[in-house]
Structures are given as C-alpha cells and as structure tokens.
Amino acid sequence: MNKSMLRRSLILTFAAIAFACQLAMQARAQTSESQSPNALQQAQAQNGQLQMPNLAELNLTPDQIQRIRAINADLKDQRQVAAQRLRQAQRALADAMESPNQNESLIDQRSREVADAQAANIRLRALSEFRILQVLTPDQRVKLREMRMEISKDLDQTDGAN
Image 1: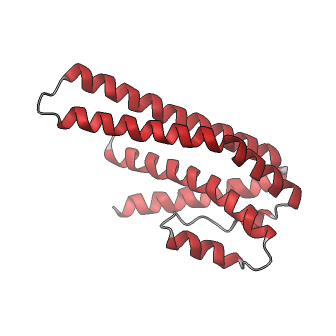
Image 2: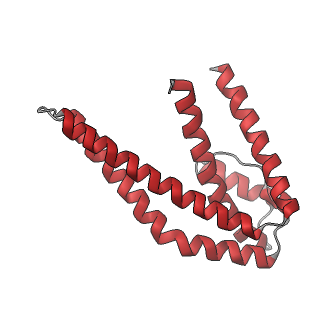
C-alpha cells in the first residue's frame, strides 16, 4: 500500500470515528435548546476534530436521538477496551522495534497484535454504524451518503494537492 493510500485510509477511518462521535454530539445538541447549529462545529474545531457536515441536516427525531444514544452507550465499554488494547499493542510494537536487542520474530508478533487490535476497532465501528443506520430513515441514509461523498471528494482534492 503506498503512502497516499495509507494516508487516505487513515483519514477515512478517522472520519468514520468522527462521524460516530458527531452523531452522538448532534443528538445531544438537538435536545438542548441553548446550543446553536454552529456551536457544535466550533466545539469540534476547538477539540481538533475533523470537520463534518452539519448533521442537523438529517433532522433526527427525538426517538432517533434516544436510540442513537442507547447504541453509543451500549458499545461504549467495548470501544474503550478495544482502544486501550490498540494503544497497548502499538506501544509494545514500538518498544520491540526500539529495543537494543531487536528480535524480528517478536516484531512480527507485535505487528500481528496491532493488526488484530485494529481489526477489533474496525469491527466495533462497523457494528456501531450498522446499528445507527438502522435507526435512520431511507431519506436520511441518502442524505448521509451524499454528505460522505462530499467529504470523500474533499479528501481526494486534498490528497491531490499534496
């Protein structure tokens, strides 16, 4: 995999994570009368998160918001454990690579552990997204697909500029 494809893959993975986080934040924002649509985007910019389209365009109902919150709450502990496992595996790989007594078989084993941890994170994101998509109406899914296509187009243009 070349460097550009790896970079794009990482950006799209981050975008998927940011999407799930934004859906949860948007659900919270839609139930709060005091928060304007731009307040969510400003908070994301301050936190260094990838800017996503305004999910208010999906016009989530209170029931959808509640169901999305329940999905996120249901998977929260699993996501935390998987993220911690990935961080530990990445640290173990870095330690093996930086060791004065490098061992190729240990590095290979640690690489597989990182790959397994990444796969677990991807499975959880896919499960979360699948469950959230089940909550959306067909029109909301179409709108979400359009929003993602726009993000992908923007990423393509950014990759072309580098």
